[in-house]
Image (cartoon, rainbow, N blue to C red; front, side):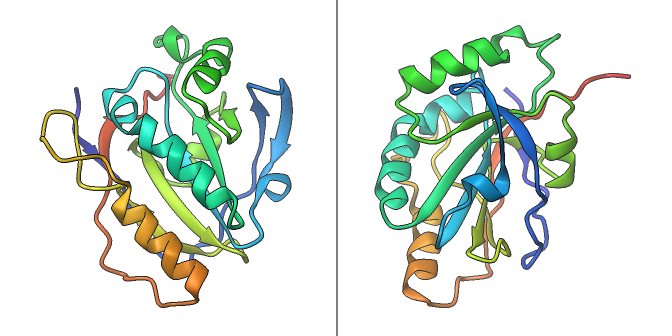
Length: 186
């Protein structure tokens, strides 16, 4: 299990647009179709990563809670499915249902979207405001597999609550730690 940190895209960066396969609906969706009225959380996740599996139950609950408040959630898997077949789109659809994802789970086959976001690990989490400007990037919370800390989503929730309340979001943000994105080899 690799411990790869986020690259920490600069705050204020405008979210790169995309047009990706929604594995549940089996049709393509764009960022502008999926963005929230108040904010948008974009998460690079995958099926097999133990770090993602660790946060999945709380992640699903958090998405339901904040989607009702105008913050959309979008999951994206960018892993090389040739070498990591457990992350294939048909299995993403099954995981989405099994884990009660109420958000689209998109497949980034070319890995261009992950590169545009400078994503490095799963989970890699970004929060954008209503204008799609980056206001938070980093960890869901301090819990990791085996460290004994409860999964709460505290870091992401604090940023989303500040966004909802019009408060300044703390710029002191900790990178996520997870499995590296499984890049295709040339």
